[in-house]
Length: 186
Image (cartoon, rainbow, N blue to C red; front, side, top):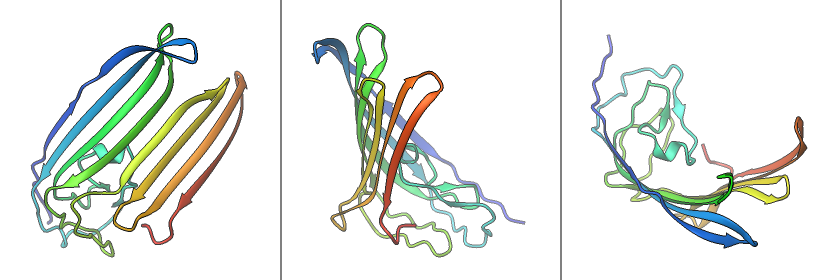
């Protein structure tokens, strides 16, 4: 019989600052949204718990603000970490439609994690890779989504993706995307 109890403490704080601005002759609202997210989960040895359906989650803007870096519950990570991000949006002042968004984020480890999956290498680090993203309307009916993960420890890009979507009418879409993933990343 296997059981574990892991208390989790999180603190999530954000503020939205906005100002009116003109861009390309149009009235817009620009936001600046700093966010700080703290997680504390104590260490518990989980090596006796078999792995059924868990895996390491992809490192992206959705995951960077989650408590557990694993998908599934066969492993619950230990954590004493702080995540910081900054988002800026340009909204149409008349309709409220988001024209584009720029984001940057990074996680800071106040203690090195010790819980791992079999075969996973947990490196001692004080901070994670940096995440950058841009998405929005770049031309009439043309949208672009980009994301980049930069590895400061190696001085290289670990992941990069870009996608474009053209939607001339309802139910008509033309899209293309490219994704780069440095080999050896798990």
